Length: 346
Image 1 (cartoon, rainbow, N blue to C red):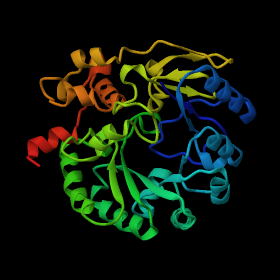
Image 2 (cartoon, rainbow, N blue to C red):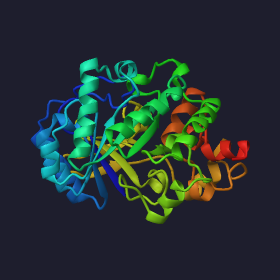
Image 3 (cartoon, rainbow, N blue to C red):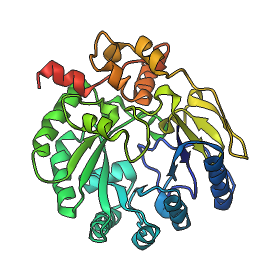
Image 4 (cartoon, rainbow, N blue to C red):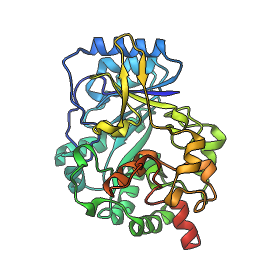
């Protein structure tokens, strides 16, 4: 079982356009939230990941994150307490960055001065010996800018660029469809990034929201390692076999995916004040998924279905809801790198 402890600590210091974590806050203290988190960790046989709304606003939280065994943190980069992070034993940091200030403002509302500060912070993390990675949102409007981001990341010393697909939930729920990646956009994205992958600069990683690429090596490396640095799940999506729960430290609501905190129908239960989970999730068992997955992810359409088991269930679910489909839990991925590479013959 994998349990994410969500929204712990202070409110975020930004209001990003792409943010999915807009669940209401409460007035309980950080001390109470950490106490609840510890009880959850005591009462449940699971691996845990601590997911604040913004880690850098909670210096007192960094020690607790490290004490749980977690060795990396996510941050918007607006304020990075490098000394505290290193002293706590954190080894890796992942920072949101876009190719230019115009994009940084559009998505994260950072001023030109703040954008420069974020870039300086990334370089400082690298110089301090932290494994430094970049997160960035990819849309049809910025695919052409990815070579510029690649060059910038290389100059700053980042070792990896994680490409994320915009999900229309939370702050992005009413965003124009023009910002949502479709199959034609995915083809362009692959054509732009494939040449960059041959360079010696940062490694480019596609999030599972783009569908896995069984023609590449990363998905096979995942299976060889039996998991990632986020969860211990041996499946590409940790909700398979109902091995995931995201628990809000603000409301004690439990969700079947951390990305879906703003969707009432993604709530699967509650956590007691004592730390016990009372949940009833949709049937994401391997057997049910194998039978009920449809579209790109049906056994008729995908020879890798038994390994993949539907890619990212939350992305497939959200886009199926937008299309008005019944049982969106079992919808196929609307885009998939494996399917597209097969179609393109590469």
